[in-house]
Image (cartoon, rainbow, N blue to C red; front, side, top):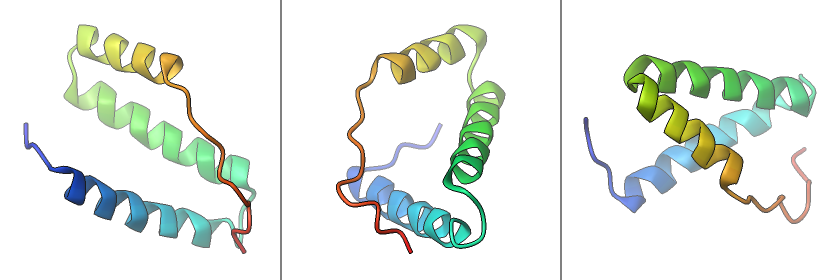
Length: 74
């Protein structure tokens, strides 16, 4: 498996987030979020064994996330 540093991850995050913002010009945020979640789940399921997948899902459930400060996406 490839390892990426935090600079790589920040770059990917900002690029994908930018695309999500563009999709929200046309689609409701729930549809955009659900689509990204579905893609993420399939990627994890494809590349992790059963134990790794379950561990990743538990990590997602246990991780606190902050909402965006100002939802000024448009």
